[in-house]
Length: 163
Image (cartoon, rainbow, N blue to C red; front, side):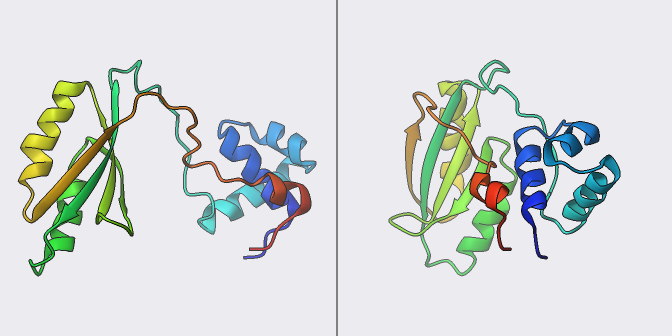
């Protein structure tokens, strides 16, 4: 799908405020409301816009502990990877999970109510997974930037970009 500068401006505007009315979005990107709505629907149908959601304040909602957890598994088991993927999907504490290159196999972004809940998660759930070899946790002390889910579209939105 070829995107023009207007498409990039629509994407940039919506990723910063997914609650924009169609009229406000159309005004921002200099389109008529009907043309803007057609473009937004095309971007949604193509899968470039995957959804809309509210950004919640985790700490104010009682999830005060955030951690990055490195996990290494014993790869001598035939199903080590598939088994781990299936298990980690069931853990509500895991906000995001990544397969990584480096000294570990996976990196988990974990959210818990407090240190006791995090400890219970690591000891009672994560550590008991088959093939668990090593767990290394990094407690987040302070978030200084969080732009997960926000792509750097400024350049493409001003000059247009290639898909």
